[in-house]
Amino acid sequence: MDISTVIVGLAGFGAAALAVDRPASPAVAKLCFFAAAVLTAGAAIFWGSETTLSPAARIGVTGVMSAVIGIALIESLRWASPSPTKPSSMATHRERTPNIAPAASPALNIPSVSETLAREQLADLRNRQSSEREATRRAMKQKQDDAENDRRRKISETATAQVDRLRGEYLNSHDGVSSAMQAGTEPVPDDWMNTRLKELSVRWTYAGQPGGGYTLAPGPNAFEK
Image 1: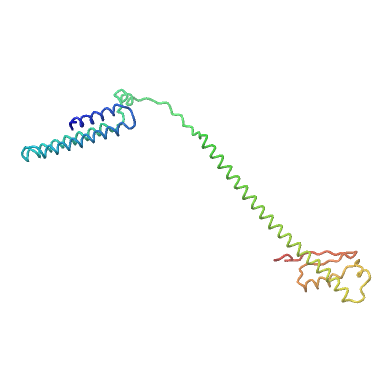
Image 2: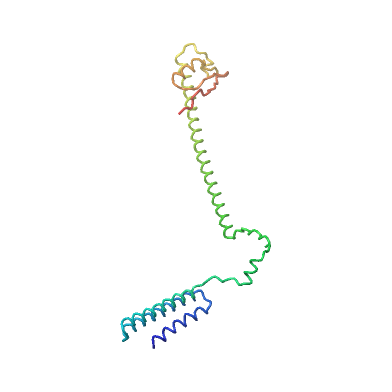
C-alpha cells in the first residue's frame, strides 16, 4: 500500500469522525490528523535524503513542505477542537434591541430525598448521643449521691454507737444513778455527754428526751471527709 494512500485515508477518516456526533469524535479526528502529519513529514524527510537536487534546492523544498505540513496540522487540530457556537445576525440584532425581560423567579432550593434522609439520620444520631450522655451523667450523679448518703449513714451510726457506749460509761463511773436512768427511761445529762463527744472528736450534739430517748444533731463539719 502506497504511503500517500495511508495519509489520505487517515485524513479522510478524521474528517468522517467529525461528522459523527459522538463524545470521542474530536479525539479520534485529532489522532488521525496527527498521524497523517507525522507520515507526511517522514515522507518529506525521506524524499529530501534521496533526491538528486542540489543541497540548496533540497533544503528549500524540504522547508516549504515542512511549513505546509505544520500549518495543515495546526488548522486540522483547530478544526477538530470543539468551539462555542457563534450567535446569528438575527440573534445579535435581538440582543441589541432594548427589551424588558420578565423578572426571573428565584430558584427553589429543594433538598433531595437522600439529603433529607441524611439530615434526619444525623439529627437522630445527635439526639441519641445527647440522650446517652445525659443518661450517663445522671447515672454517675446517682452513684455519687448513693455513695455520699451511705457515708453519712455510717457516720450517723458511728455517732449513735458512741452515745450508747458513753451512756454505759456514765452509769459505771457515777454513783447514785437513779433507777430510771439505769432502766433507760431517764437520759444521761446533756452536758456530760456533749463534753465526752467533743473529747472523742465526734462533732454531734446530744439532747436527752423525756422517757430516756435522745436526739443527735450534726454539728459543723460533722460529715467532713
